[in-house]
Length: 173
Image 1 (tube, helix red, strand yellow):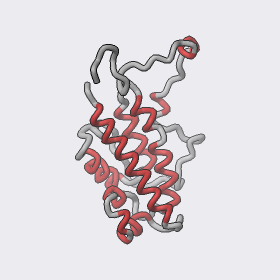
Image 2 (cartoon, one colour):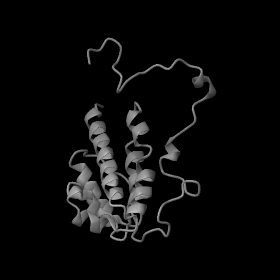
Image 3 (cartoon, rainbow, N blue to C red):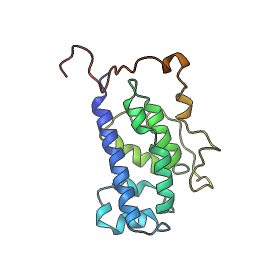
Image 4 (cartoon, one colour):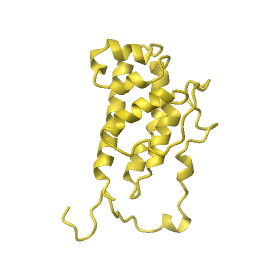
């Protein structure tokens, strides 16, 4: 399957999330509500998905949740086999926990560019967790299940780059 355009769109979205986070932190108001700032600040108007977040989410909480939801994306997007469920489930779990309506709105936004995003995940339940940000040490991320340690023999193997984003031998791309 040729999913390089989906990977590109997801990488661009990751950049948008980081840009939105940067704009929000520049406001220097960690206790401010993201939804309110998204309405008030011109710099945030292009990030419509911010309106899908829980209305009580603060800038500080958003920063922690974005870091938790997207930290594995660069690695996952460079894997030869794209783990679609891992990409979507970390965002669902870490950024939209207890906000099923917001999750649905966010998925619709992403699916305008990446048709499969969020498909096949279990339905979310209403009601936010009490933790403003999930503690990775206490709670396993859905992606951790998909990450396995490489056998010791692979550590000594030559570091060959095969498949996306590296061209196959003899290809012209």
